[in-house]
Length: 465
Image 1 (cartoon, one colour):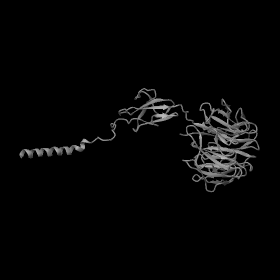
Image 2 (cartoon, rainbow, N blue to C red; image 1 turned 90 degrees about the vertical axis):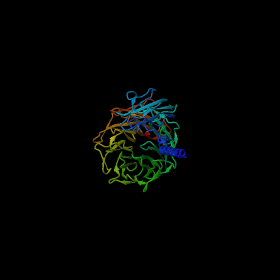
Image 3 (cartoon, helix red, strand yellow; image 1 turned 60 degrees about the vertical axis):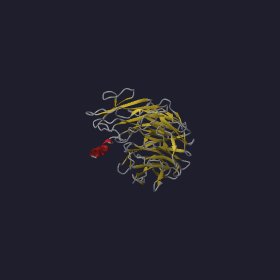
Image 4 (cartoon, rainbow, N blue to C red; image 1 turned 180 degrees about the horizontal axis):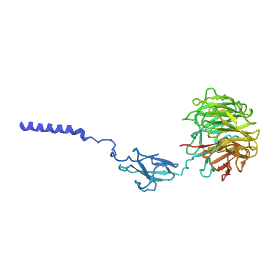
């Protein structure tokens, strides 16, 4: 009996020990993730992840360890603290390769290496800049990608894209997500999403949207929140909010807003504060303030401001200090200073400045140094330098520069390297390189590039990814 009791006591003692230490036996087990030692740098991560892609990729490399430096290789070699390329910007991968990276920090243990294989198929390189041209008679939109070095144009796959009846104007938002086209004979606005890889256009749900009578010119404000269209037949301006996600248009309360007779060219100043419309039959420019919250237009005191006969295109320089109007009936350009507080216009000394025959459109380069005016009856472009203090214009050596037949609207690319003109009677687009020092134009090899029938309006966009 004594042995039995002693054995039971031992058994109970052993069971107690097992029960006591049983929880400890499971510490660190199960599905918990293993942790890096406190002094080891976290391994790099790639975004997008390794895989197969139909186009070039920009791969961001990050580590969660603050203050760490990353080095990477793309040639199959192993990176270290002293070998490989120091990471600064996303790695542009245009062909199939293995990306390897490590992260390190002084006084810490270098991270483990991250490796990923990227396979790039034969898909096209994503485009960065595109040109869109409305073709009035063929009721469509020609789309081109821009070759970054030369400025040459290549038709986007699927171009031309269908528009409404007699598309007269195209405008693109600042982020390059959406494009809008005024269809003059349909009294509508077609809206499109822009494919960020190819530049192709897809009409969005709800498009086309109603406009006034004979919409002829479109503008999107610098924030991408509002769109405006001048209605030539109803002498007013329709205003819309832009849905940032879908690109859909919703007409603003109080729209349309009154303008002068035969309202045509419109523009918004670079800060999105003021709106201007050229009134072709009123020899004037109407000016309004823009409510930053609602997009509502309010007439500026003193508006409309006198211009030449048959004003058509209107533009504001990037500083927001000066405005310019092409006067088709008087073959010249009116120039104004803009009151920074009120938006009121005051004609500049020496204005108007001589242009060619029937000047149609005005385009200012992004630096604010040069201005270009298309002359429809003389088939050329007048080019000027802008005095940064006074806004006065001085003809550039070699101006005017030849275009195709009946040049209509024109645009400068966002980098200020290239200038494009829609040639209405030549069914083409002329392309030029801009001399950064003088503003002189040199024809791009391969120009002019074929467009649809009676190209009229043109927009250049930087596609933001």
